[in-house]
Length: 286
Length: 301
Image 1 (cartoon, helix red, strand yellow):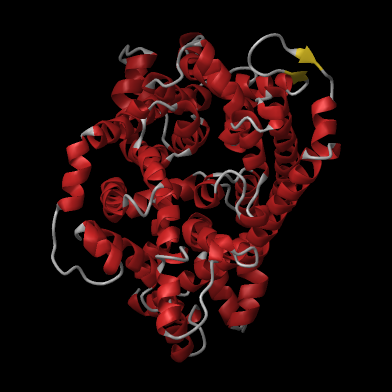
Image 2 (image 1 turned 30 degrees about the vertical axis):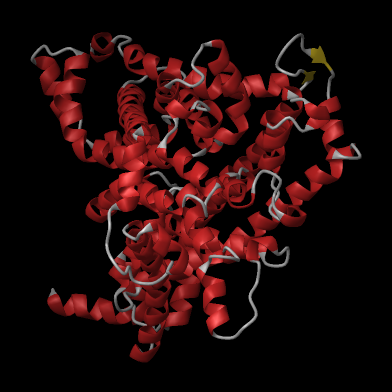
């Protein structure tokens, strides 16, 4: 076994170790860009405001919490953080709930028009929000959902195409035996779904939730159009506003960027494999 | 018996999602097509104008050139993705596949920007390319080289934009390629080495052809992104596309005329809807071509 592994490792090797080393070094240097921008953003968030003007890229002379104090003193950042969190959590929960149910209904039952319905649900994957934002704006206006988090949550929750696609793929892989036996015990369909299917799906639910929630947390376009009231701003909109008056508000910008980044970077560090699974699971492969 | 028991319970599973999806995803698509044939400011009555909005888009003295210019920029961006970003993604996936040193770390870092919002990416870009405070000019100054104004320079802006896009979004396609390569059965690879295939031949005759289906779907996804790009250029250089409108894209034009009151000093939703409809048409064409190619692959397999 071990020998075989070593052998197949050799088959895939570039001709010389030197070439591999050089290529790898170049790429490691490239990843230095990411480390650099993340690192000095964190460092800068601990500098004094006056130091940012004179020493933007150096090591801080003194680590201070001034920027964070300024950001938190305003108080509104808590609300913005709350808005982002609420939209992300509720939008994701709704999306996962609806998508898993639809996927279950489509992949576990036989009925006429199944193919057409599947195609119908995949349209959303092809049409970007930029195309439909104007009618959405008008619909939101009519339903009094403009500038409400409720509206955004409903909208996020409705974008089920990709999640449904991943769920359907997964449902195809689990055996029907469990359901059949539960059915013989007299369980109804909904009980089977909540008691048997959902527990089995936990890893998929987690994967889908991860990629969906990262997308919602980072979304800029929809909140910008549909949430124009300051009280409803999400963190991305706050950063956008700081960027507009960057030089004046450099200190708070760094702090706000760090606050926005920390949750997603942490998620990524712990669950990067699951995230990748989500991305690749939603793509058509050979 | 089995059928009887299942009855029509699937309706209860599908209906909630179906209704929400229809209201917020499908109806807007139909609505935008409907709006595109009207002249309407959002208030008052809609005036039916037929295809006038589309004609204006292409032939009007003021909007025509603006729209064409933006559309060409989108196509330029799309070509850059096809010819630069996608091959880069594949090469990186290949390098991970052959397990170059530290490939796990590199993979982790290259994919990371995927979780970073475009507002923050623009923030980083400002830190690097801002002519006054950015580190790039700082370093050039220390080296005694001439400094640039980067996004303020029409020769540089587009190239820098592409570099940022590569940094931000090459991760997802790379991962799709990579997981696709891992799915290729080991037996094929081993058989090829027994047959005396060298590295280059294996790359050309096995890995590349077997990656084509995922390549098609990556290209389609990135094409849709390229056609609907908005966040980065808007945040980086503003709604007019920066100096000489180098970074003006169709969606920025859409934004200006729909939400930005540029056209005759007032908004015209019909006009914006026409732009959206055109984008929709292009996307439908692109995706149906993709489906044709993909189904051909399946057929051949």
